Length: 145
Length: 145
DNA sequence: ATGACTGCAAACGTTTTGCAGTACA
DNA sequence: TGTACTGCAAAACGTTTGCAGTCAT
Image: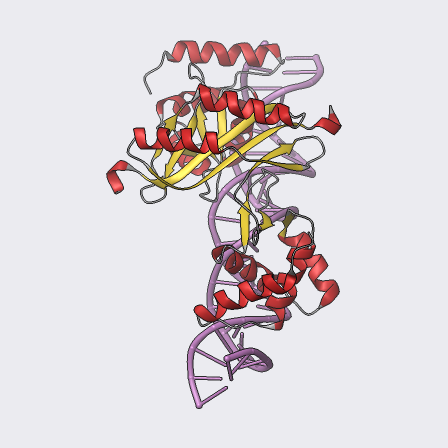
């Protein structure tokens, strides 16, 4: 993920100061590691990487920070059915949905304005106002077939 | 859920005997309670109801039975983001997706052959073979707006 | 008879929390 | 300076497992 990390930090600092929260060294370390990691990662996986940069960062802080960044929409939280939550850096990314390979666990992305339009109509049909949605396709990817 | 319980039992017995498994009194109690409960329920919630019929049924058996029935496609397992799995009786029901009200937690259903067709095309585009999918819309329902 | 099934209690893996001390704005 | 933040350890949560005994076929 080669994205302008300066911009990522700026976005994060903006959110924090707007909410009277602090940009601590732990939050910075976690933020940078998250945006340099692979696209999707779990908490323990990220913790291991973060600890290489700063071995004093605790599990508690990591989990608290993931929750905070999710609320800030810096990260997005997913459940790919692995028994733990997955996170995805979202700054500079558009909304998309996922294909999950049940064999190799690889995550692919797809995006369909057409589907979004239909699901919006389905919701409206029932007087339902969509806030978010989650659309996942589980199956076998190209490389595993 | 007023469905022919005799038919439900028959389906279940068929699956069990086809796999050399046994139709125990515990499995029967759980099956019947599942199909008489509300459409979507969690394990602990079902356990409480099941215990009213047979107080000796254990948590372990309940969880093992839910897993078994899910494999048999008697039940379907969902994650509505409540921190626990939800189950839905599927005998005599067609596939459908869900709308979840984030306020009152009510579950509504929708179904769109059109969406299924597009998602199939999106998957094919990436050489991906879909096995199952999960499509959930989170928002505010008619009654909560 | 025999293998599947059960209840019990303990273990599990992930995530959350209370607390006393630390550090950012 | 003061409140947000931290690490630690313990707890919490839903779920799973090992085991010794029981039951359906």
